[in-house]
Length: 345
Image (cartoon, rainbow, N blue to C red; front, top):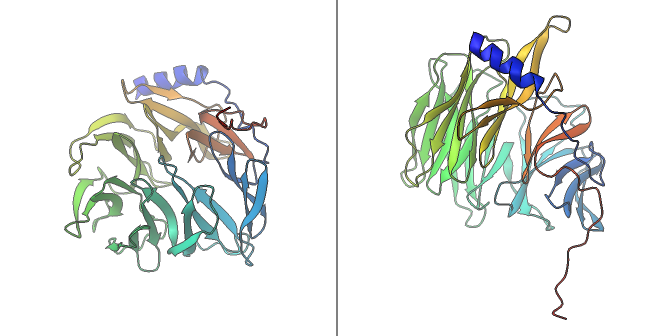
């Protein structure tokens, strides 16, 4: 514990002031922007999602229920998935399903693929997954062939549980669950066999598994629920094309970290607890990075109360008080640039 505290004190003293993401769009309206700034999805007003390509702007989607929109891509950047949140200032039900749409990045005419929460794209963006809260099922669907799997999760009374999932190979979906004794559980669903098997179990009850992946690995973070004093850990699983097995522990701490991991080529970012504010009676949290090569822990922000990380195209962002701070990736795409067109002259 003393060693961890000394490491944190050293890292915090060298935490750099992060740059803000500078674009032509107001941060509070931005729902997605490509790494070169050429494609952006912005919320124009309640119920209207705009698509901006270069200098051309259009009303991409519109909804009469004062909706907000979540736009998510993957590392393959072929498609984006859009979760439509109706009456977001009026309806606060955490277990309400939302309409889910998918479209090719920068293209019109989105296609509705179902209703659920927290959609994600996988394997060249040919697969999409989302969670149906009413049936407690993970829907895994091929957007090209329309092949669909309904993967049941363990029936539970925890209204705050939402599974995390990654498709580690073309045949395997990894997803988090809770077993009958209240322990976090990581399962592997085999598409060929159409059944799931447990791969990993939490160390103690009161924790959940958070998943993220990159080209050559996926990571499993175990973090405690809010208000439960448990430690945290992050595990690294290499990809070998077969059923996932074997891992190394990249990070372990007695602190009750928030998690919310983002995987990049050589690092894993997450929200780490760094202290306690006795005046506000709340945790102090920052964005942290664990390097894959040597498991070195670095505190990367000095904002005091980081609650979430967002991976957007090749960036990792911190949303904080109507601003977006850049942990990794280009931060200034405010200037107007035109792509060069090769005319052959």
